[in-house]
Amino acid sequence: MRHLKHKHRIAGSPGHRRTLVRNLAVEVIDHGKIKTTHTKCQFMRGYIEKLISMAKEDTAANRRLAYTRLNSRAAVNKLFEEVAPKFKNRPGGYTRILKLADARLGDGAPLSYLALVE
Image (cartoon, rainbow, N blue to C red):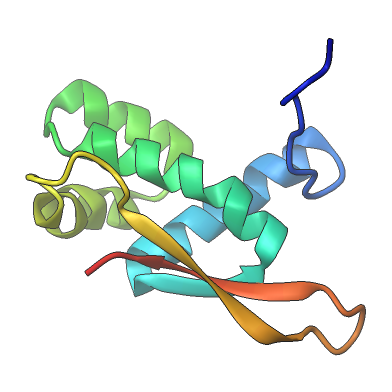
């Protein structure tokens, strides 16, 4: 049976999706929050939370894994030195999604903020 097998569909090809996810993750790490469609926020939540959980243990192997997922040295350094230490004693739930009341003008897509919990 296919129950609970729903995945959020973002981007077209796998390469485009990979690039989009990397760019959004780097922006969340750099700025602390991003404004995008609600579907992208839901997709990105698990990706960001796994990165932060990995970064809580600062090892060379974890830095290399984070670099393969982010492809940005500056973002990896900020993730390990500034973002992850804030969540050292928190077991999970590093991000929150805040829905916005108004939709995007062009296509009416629902918008949300994906923000790191302070």
